[in-house]
Image (cartoon, rainbow, N blue to C red; front, side):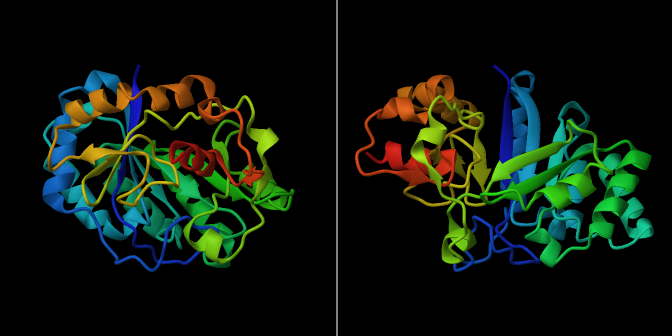
Length: 287
C-alpha cells in the first residue's frame, strides 16, 4: 500500500479563520530545518511506498524561502512528489502569483491544495484564488480547492464560483471538525452518530509528522497533542520505517481503516453526535 505523508510544518498562520482546528493559544512554532531534511531523507529510503508528501499547517507558504531552500538542498527531490497547502495570500496579483509558482516548479513542488470557503473569504479575496490557479496552469502545477463546510448548504455559492477555476475532480469538500477555533466559536458542525455508520476513514495509516517530530497515524484534526490517541511515537527516538511498522501493526488503526471507527465500539451509549470522523476516532480510541 502506498501512502501520503503529511509534514505539519507550522501552526503559524497569517489569518484567523473561525472554523480552524488549530488551538491559537499554543506557542507559535515551525519545523526546524534539520528535522525537515531528516524526514525527507528517511522517506526517500522507502520512496516506492510514498505517493505524496504534503506540507501543511498553519500557512506553510509564510516560509516559502526556507522550504524552497531546504528542498533544493535535497539532491533526490525530483524523485519525490511534493504538495503544499495554502490559503493563497501570496496571490494578490498575477505577477506575484507567477513568481511564486515559478519558484515552486523549479524546486519540483508540483501540487497545491488551496483552502477557500466562507471562512477564508473573510480574509482572502476570490481574486487571489483566480490568480493562483492561472499561475499554476502556466507553470504546470496541479491545483486543488479545499472547501470546509458546516451543516447546511451555504457553501454552495463559493463552490459554484470555484468550479469556474477548478475541474470537477479538483474540489475537495471536508466537514468542519470541532477542535480549536471551531470549538471556541461553537460552529454548527455537529452531526448525529448514525450518519457515520459504514463510514471508513481514508486518512488513517497515512502518517503525519509535526514540527516537534511527533509521528501520528493520520493527518486529521485530532492530532497535535502529546496525549492524542493517534500518536505513534517521535522521530527523535525512532526511524520513519520503525514508526510506520508500529503504526501498521496496531489493530485499532487497521480496524478504522478497513471497517470504520464505529467498529471499535458499536454501542456508543451516551455519544449522540460528533462533528467528524476525526472526533469520533478520538472518542472511541480513548475508551
